[in-house]
Image (cartoon, rainbow, N blue to C red):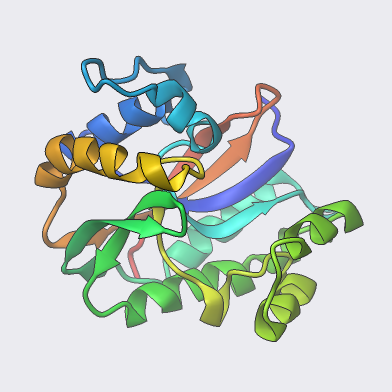
Length: 227
């Protein structure tokens, strides 16, 4: 399988109850590259609610999707991911909680996030030699939402505005929802997903993923945080 873009994710373990439900909620299993049936009996059009995040799979972005720079290859990126993960330790947080992220719903971490931000920053900076500069059209599109000076600086330097000091860990569960629809979706997720969420919540590995010709992201490899 060939990929057009690569990213570094936190990808929840596929065998946990909460991640199994959340992956089916999104309708995509990036570990196996299979489409999943959405949960039934919710009274919601889950396919429409999750159409955008579904193609990315269940994840939190550590280094945003990137095209490979000239002269770089997937094999080199794999080696660099393994080397980086070997220098970094697992991250423990108090848990996960359902939260509104603008007009999206996402899982956000609870507890001290210092080590988490350090982990994400290392992914952004230490692997950046593999990133090709983003096309101007992509940069212009990101600017349409209105960026702060620091976000603009991040976009220019790292190709994405919400990294380093602007990073906010989140596992996206919906697309952008009309405000009147948020409470009903929250109720379903509070009923079916929130009771399954882990406490404490641990990040034990990093996942290298690739965007294939089908427009969806597929797991390439997991790298244990063994530093």
